[in-house]
Length: 301
Ligand code: PLP
Image (cartoon, rainbow, N blue to C red; front, side, top):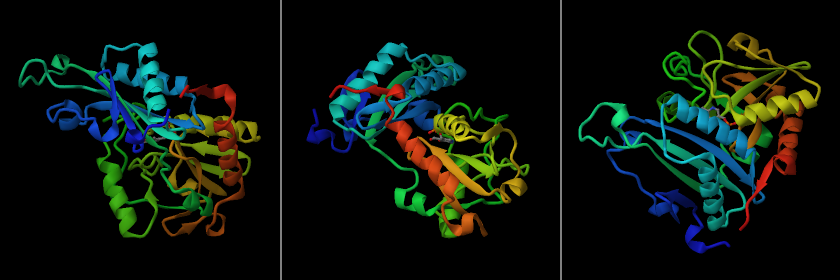
């Protein structure tokens, strides 16, 4: 049942569901002092989670990669998420689940094994990483030449993480130059990803998306499936900036809004500076799929 105290969102923390602005974690938690966190974000659309099991698979793999044990199993995390969204009353929501390293049980310890790992979650009204009206007109992207994505060799980017220093620096540059958002390369001439999204390029009936130094997004997976259904061949591989700039169309993917056609990258225009027709069709197909029951887990409110 909808409740006004949860209008801005709800959080599940230490077994309790509270209004989002009452949820806090300690200042000495390594989540805060070291960005020592992994997390995931699943969309809720028309009162149901979309692909919840795929997001939980990735979240569990991330916790394992970071050697975290939050002391909760899959069923417990699933019911925490259902209970929290149900209590919030939100039918369209952005739902985050977080595994934090915690604070060492031995004061002052620098040994990560001493930390008490913990789980919390929160949900807020649905967030679009790019506003729908901007996406429909085609997004503008800025690629800086002096900031690159932190490479997989330094930080496994398949583990969803809070190391956003590169993205934040790039976003400042993008905004300073009047662009909507930023896209990073790997520093060796290949594309990586942007703040909260993966990138794709369409060449005739072929679609290419970078494979390394990127999160393997769940929307990236959905887009690859949709592309194949729409008759495209798909390739996950290195995509150079040079090749990218001669693509017919370009689009982005994120759980925060699905598929976003791109109109401009630096001074280069795609689709005459508007949203391309193929990317627009894929965007519509994504929203149809969000509403498709097979991959949805209904929430009881
Ligand atoms: N890349 C990064 C760095 C992200 O943070 C995100 C999502 O927030 C994505 C890609 C897209 O992933 P997904 O489609 O699972 O939302």
